[in-house]
Image 1: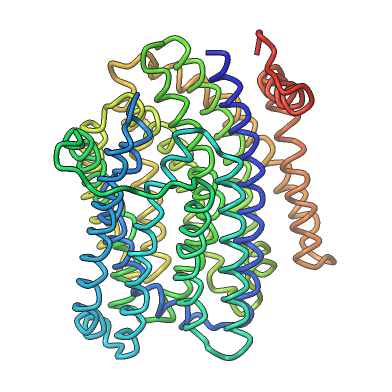
Image 2: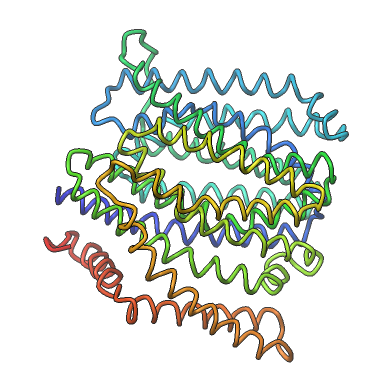
Length: 491
């Protein structure tokens, strides 16, 4: 168990560093591309990625999670799963190429035919790296995964920026989308050194397929619910509206998507290894949940209060119309900060059927919200999206933890200190921002506003809310690990 604690802490440190690097790279790339390209370029590619993203869920078929979650797994099973992933990838890529004319006709955009065909190749490239990534995650080699992620983002960013500067417009975004899974697949193959063997009929993967299939249904439902807004806006409001909404959505999701993918890998692996120790798993989960909220709540408040300055600084003046959309989407950061850790717990506990039922219940409400907000354009859809998601927070918590070692009030008590601290910090930062409304550039104003927000939040959550021991304990454990290569027994 001590070895698991050490590997979890080591993995957390590695993925935290990777998270910071990925966040910075994605943000810098977006800032550069937003100044080199027009909203319609992003809108065109966004029309297709809404479809390829659906198929990409089937490419994985939840088999990477099945590999990680299993207590033991054989080489024959992993090889068989690899070829199943490749088969799904090829079939889906061919299917995507065949329906490309239909997608172009749906949006009334002939240019989308070849965009769709090229993006379809990414489905095969993604499939090629699924099991290799799962093996690295299963072995908790998170430093390696972080390095691969960063290298892949750097390569994809360079390709996109070079293409945009050369005048290739939306094709630079297509090249970035394809080069990312290509570089990632090459990296994980080299890192594992594993070459899959031939598939075996009697390798015992049926139960893993059932596990993955249930996760796929859940993932598909969640994806459709989270992306139908973009499909509807692209169809009824056009590329410019979708470009504005899409960039606001991407900007608001950079923190949560990076945090979820980084922290989620560590948490899912650690919680899966603790299936026979409920008390220790409860402790791991609540600490991780508190940290996730501590990282995301200040971002939520900053996005809501300082949207105008953030959009001008990060995307440029020509994107100022995205600021209201950006502000309206801010509450979704909080919802995903709560929902993502709950999904790690349910998957690690094997409660995937409950996850599927929850997604099937929540999705129709989200879609209804989009339909109600659609006549009012991107702002109406963003507002409806946030309202529906916020309405589901408390029922979602109660349903997710029912029958587990974690109670509803455990989650509420854990969320209370960072939530109250963020509200107090936001109020003070807003007062400072209003004082500086005139006489400062948006960049200077945003730096001061964010600095006040973060400083007050940290002071409140560690000193007033009494979570100093949690943060300092993890920090001292990290320093002890890096300096002595071990974790104190009391950590």
